[in-house]
Amino acid sequence: MDELDVEVLIVGGGPVGLSASIELSRHGISSLLVEKHPGTSIFPKARLITTRTMEIFRAWDIVEEVEHTGMPREEFLAVGVGSSLSSDDFVRSAAAIQRDAPQSPTYTYLCSQDRLEVILRRLAESMPPAWVRYGAAVTSLRDTGDGVCALVESDTTPLLVRARYAIGADGARSGIREQLGIEIEGPPTLGHMISIMFDADLSFLPLERRAALSFLRNPPCAVEAVDSGRRWMVQTGYEPEEGGSPADFTPEVCLDAVRAAVGVPGLPVKILGVMPWLQQAKVATGFQRGRVFLAGDAAHVATPQGGFGMNCGIQDAHNLAWKLAAVLRGTAGPALLDTYTPERRPIAARTVDESLNNALITFHMMEGDLSMTEAIRQQAGRRSSEGLVLGFHYDSAAVVPDGTPAPEPEDPYRTYVPAARPGHRAPHVWLTGEHGRVSTLDLLGPWFTLLTPAGSGWLQAAKEVAYASGVTVNAAEISDDGSGGLTSSAWAVEYGLEETGAVLIRPDGHVGWRSCAGRASTEELAAALETILARS
Image (cartoon, rainbow, N blue to C red):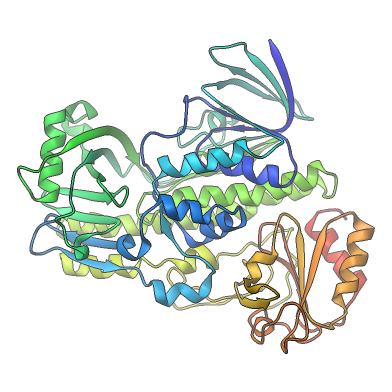
């Protein structure tokens, strides 16, 4: 038997597990990712990448590759309803791209999971000190108190892995969650579903009928664009209580379902694959037990309506990785890891609830309780979800509150109100730099970042705190008159700072502490860092 010692064991090689591997490598933490399947996904599954996830990809320098691989957002970021794709009653509504544009340096995109995983795997494998191993399964995992011990089996020699921590990113039927004895809560299964992936030339459909997702009533189903070419999916269902099963979906049945959805009886079609799945809305009661953490579908399962599930999981990994790194490097106390569940579970629960709300619109339309006109109005209103994906905030011991109230938008699902209040994602503001335009988000990285107006005095305080604490704190001054390397007349107002204020941003891009108007104080900044990192 071979043996391997790493700092973190990751179980599951989907987008969430791969993201955990990438983030840990960015922090210099060794990891082993184990995935039971022989390679990346062969089915599209998730497709929508939210604005917040695209910002993370921007930090990883893969946005251009993702956009090249995915679908043109101007064409496909839309939803449609009708009797079929060809019916006279088909209507379409596109996302409010221009309305949302000022909120981020990037925006939501569509890239099917099978293509995205290839990009993420290539990146993960290129970043030491990570090992990525497909075609292998964790057959036992034990928390030893000071670490975890796991047996990894494959077609070759078994591997005994010793790690300090483990992440279970092994999907909705998580064996890790089951072994930990963590329960999952939520309504009964919402639907027994079948995804039929097919190849067909639908270029005869005009632009106004191209949409990421179309809900159809004759027969009840949904059609998804998988790429901007010939790959599409029909999603339909079956009723086990009426004797239905996946076996009912023979090639002939699938072919008929595709042609009926498109509305062209003799359409040339090639069936590429059929995948059964359950439509669910569930959240685990806890995301951690001892030295083992849950992330992604192992921790929460959203309906596909809204495209939130994969994104929420990637942000789990983004939240957890810097905390594991800080504890493993000795710059944070172990209690920092206790903030993972309090920070991520409320966000996951809200995300799952909102995905359920989206699904209910479709259910009501399919059942005839909503007209197609009303259904498209409601669906269109929920295509823009920047309030949900950008406006969430954390309340935990890893955040130092400043006593200011959180924004209260009239529609917290759709409307994002920028806020640099502790716990919130640091707002995007365009700055003018030496080499052109740069976002405030581009100043962030796998370290703490302090932003302050030029001449405030906080720059020196940050240097002293970093030296004394051994924690990397990158500090940047921003002028409002062009006197410094970075300039913006609006950023301080956006961040709620007066000329002597400062904001400390955590490695996950969320504000950890803010002094709106106080004088520069090494002691105050040091105390904030000690609190965030659970060092006191």
